[in-house]
Image 1 (cartoon, one colour):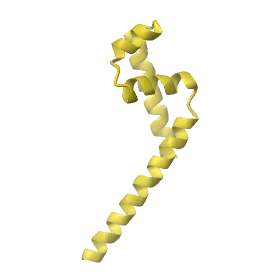
Image 2: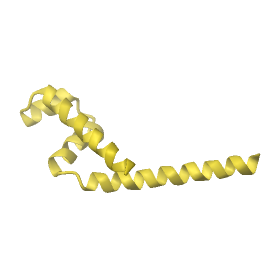
Image 3: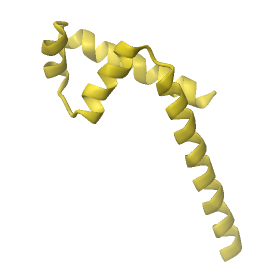
Image 4: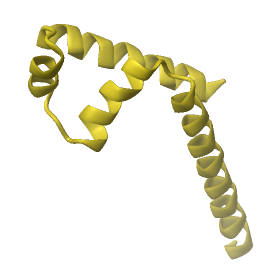
Length: 79
């Protein structure tokens, strides 16, 4: 039983590593404006409203773009 659980844990860790590598590759392929938007929101911790003011776009537009970029990343990672 312990050997089976250890094997499952190793498989899960390997899958996580593969997904992280895939995400990194997908992020590298994003257009610079989309990558900058993600960086501002997630790495920089900015609110959508703050980003919108900074790039002179409506907050709804920024939310929609973030949604689309996240969906594209999910599709890319799952391939």
